[in-house]
Length: 415
Image 1 (tube, rainbow, N blue to C red):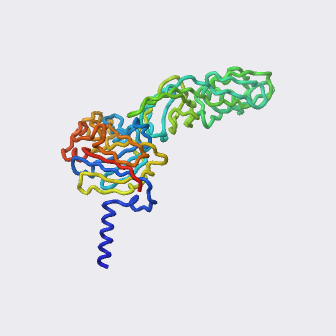
Image 2: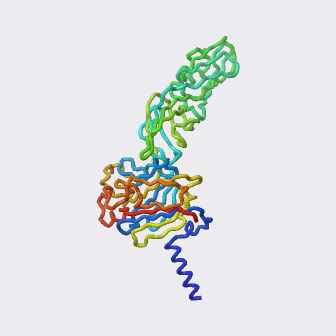
Image 3: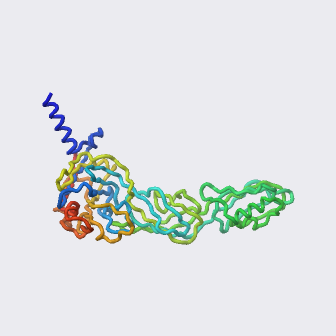
């Protein structure tokens, strides 16, 4: 019994030290694993922040993770570029995350008033939206009455206008109303309300300009009794989109559309996955930054891991399935920092202490996800050395050493 208890104690200690498959959560065995080893100049500091960041589609080395060097826009406080997943070590714990993006409207313009949701993809960068030609919503007339047609020359408020006339061709009291469309409509403004109220008072003869506040010109037939509805479709604008990634990859241009007075994505949205809120559209320009969100999706613990326990190295094994299906190539970077920074007043890179692969931290490594082999610092085009220029800030030499990357190896292998 004493020997059994001894073995159980050893097994539990090893599990805590080395880690278990997904921390003992019962995940089925992986088929392909990625072993990661990172060494620092000094012992790992559990109060510091250590990230091994991946992009599951590197574009053959053109899209990759990089550290954030300076503000005022800090995003998640540590990394930008192209990040789809990452492993985070802090306070004695490793965790695997799926990254996501968040949009931040930096400049309103053209009727673009807000952005929300999670933009698609893994690329942080800046979108410039140039609102151009506006197509005003078509007005259609239904029911029987003296309005034979309506033309929308300038209105952007989608919805239905109900009206009723008597035999003399005058409005019936209480019969005129406006109901904004769920998409493309808004509550009537002061001028629109005044016209609706005036007509709904009753006894008012319809004219071609009776609903001019809505941008409508009416074509009228003979005076007569009737009940009709004028439906105004949503107005749509053409948008020229330019996207400049924060790191890696070339700028891209595309065409999109926006609906006035809407928070519903169009079939060709300017930012895929994001919801853009608009008011009345006009020729103009808006700017939106897409950043790596500070609220990622937690996937769990690595497949296996070793706690540093006073050593100067981090070691873990990742189940490659955590990075998604159909992988062909990967990029990765190691990003370490003594603190996460969100303060927009910190704009000088020398005000914080961080490191990444390469002298400036931006020499991420890309490799095939189809070849089972090792990649190491000694084989890198620009090997990682000590005392990089990014190791600044008002921290002790010991803390600088704790985040100073000096060696790394990643190995892709079958289980």
